[in-house]
Image (tube, rainbow, N blue to C red; front, top):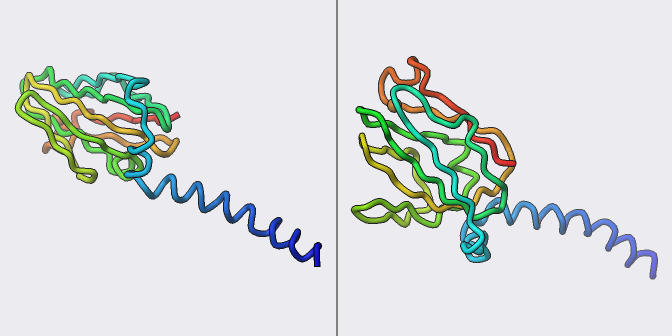
Length: 149
Ligand SMILES: [Cu+2]
């Protein structure tokens, strides 16, 4: 009888671990609830014609981060990184005119000479493609990478 109990434990332990990892990746609200914003990293990304700088943008898994997007160009630019957007927990996006509290979106546009502050927690290590989807910009080289370490 004892060996049956032990076998059940041995079998279920990896399953419990796997479900814990899955829950972490799947529940942005739980990640945000645990985040300590007093230990926040700040990373600034500058957008110009036609580049993101730096590239790669480096963020740390599980660390609350303020991603500051600055458009120092003369045209509007988009910050689009679909794979990255799917693996982060966004607390809010803030600008001088207000803030957005929306956990999911597909693109962030920054007007010329303006900036926004994006409060997020990266949830999964990896390298993600970054692109500006304004017509012609990617073709002129406006592409980059985001690395979550
Ligand atoms: Cu652009």
